Image (cartoon, rainbow, N blue to C red; front, side, top):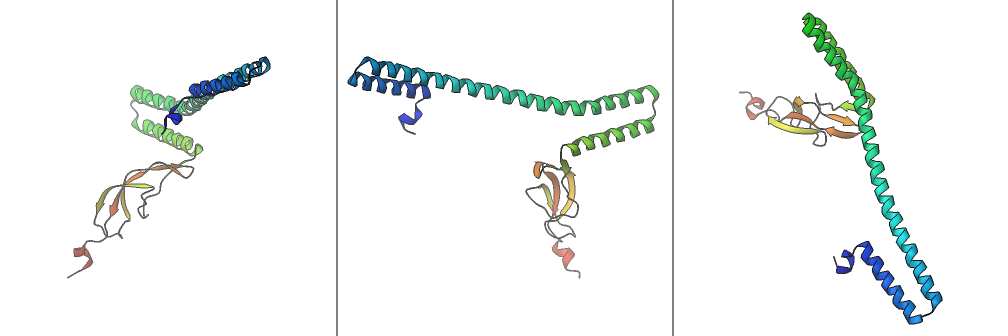
Length: 183
């Protein structure tokens, strides 16, 4: 990068001002000097307006991000409240069956919230390993074809055709040689 490219905007503005002043001095005249001052003033105002615009856009983006986060938290708070009630109920009446039923309902609510946000689990059972969707944690011989998913260690999720978290899986190396050739 050349020295000219490294100059900041205020330095470039000063260079333009100096250049215009030299041109005016060469042509002289009060009208030219007045026009130069007017042009410089407009340039400085435009630069200040642009800097203020950049700051305002950054502030607005930050506020928007915070509001989006707040909205998501508001959707999860009922789940948290229900989970707290379930544990309070368990501690007061020691009914494990009711507790389990309550937790299952909370899990269903959780799934509904995820689905409403477009989050879906990545399918693994019976599928071929796809490095864009799956993360191979283990590769082992099995009776399945090579590169077939044998086991899922942790589910993965997608949202709007974009992977949020890949599935962690075990991948088949195919049948071992001793399994392929019966004697």
